[in-house]
Length: 207
Length: 348
Image 1: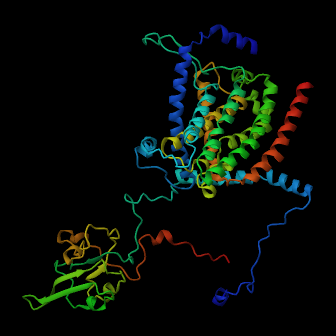
Image 2 (image 1 turned 90 degrees about the vertical axis):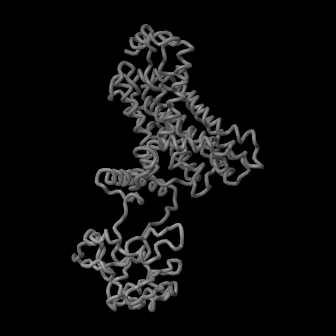
Image 3 (image 1 turned 30 degrees about the vertical axis):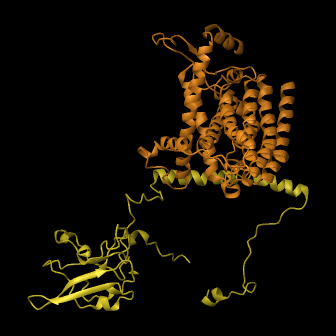
């Protein structure tokens, strides 16, 4: 089916197929026969069976749909764009950020502001870095443009805080030095979700 | 068989005293109110499982204390009486529902009879019967009381000056007029077979094991009574009175707090009553000799209770006109034919 057929909005010109639901019987005897047929068809018990099967599967085959949210969470896609994280170099523990300022330039909502200076080794380093999360639209341009994979989007989507300034400073987003071994490498753009294997279904080749 | 059993009962059982009956009434009130509350928990759990949800989980282990939380909420909630409502009737209506539901339970067998041990002061040696009042017209009394319970929704809906309530009350009236005929006529055939309206006689008639259950002799009456019982307790295929999607909450729209809770307790007590009637009249009842018989009737009652929840999870509910069509044009003729055939079989 080509796209043009979906774009045709003129009602009545499409080639719809109607479902065959039969006709309502006119005469009394025909109505009676229909009632008796429907009564003894056992469709009601099919309905009972469906719910019972659902209950047994939910209870004993671990087919429960509920996620008890604050206690258990669904795996989040690595492409998800939540609160930013500032990664550091695994070898030395230095900032990955080289203070190039590209993220500040590309930010379309003007929420990144940074200040840089030269350190003792005449390397550029970032001295001030804040993201105004009241303005940020989480477009992901800053992470995409970063040449060093220094600013990335993390999986922290529960971003309620007491103040607007919450987790907007460079140090708040930076990986703590003692948690360096826990730092997750960013496999963002184009990465598959962690439960991708479960979601894969066999390609139907039967047709 | 019957006479010996009846004679045996008369000889051996101690005298039923007023104290015993009062104790029994208190037991029924306490246990059945708690069971009604527990019924809401079971209902929420079963419905949740059938929809692949977990149901209440946070209050207590597996949400078991949810009943207590709900009870606290209901008791402490403000009791709002609308400005234009007929205040007296508005306040009395839920009491009618709850009271008639429990009055109906006074004539059905609930829990085995026992004698309070002698070492307990004051009440020692008192015999507590299994039926609070073993009326010789027990079945009639119970059905009548459950029918009178419909005054609750009817008066509640009409007194609250709310259009949803009025519609709920009107639906109460048509539902009552429709199913009550079927209830009476369907239960008439077993009554003709047993020749008595007492629950004890029904129980004794089916004392010979599964083969002597009345459901094998009266399957049609059983199904009809079950359908009418669903209508009697406002359960799902026939929950026209308070169907949320159509008439907000029907007769209970303006109610809050414990008055609303009383409607609920009444509804669940009625469910248990219908389950007891169905178990005693059609499924052999209890075996008065041993504790095992009481366990079996508990299982039967639990099955009927579960069936009501199961049906609620599975089937859509029907329109009022479909209910009237079903009751008057389908079920009532079948019930009449069933009675005629039963009468012919008895005569021959």
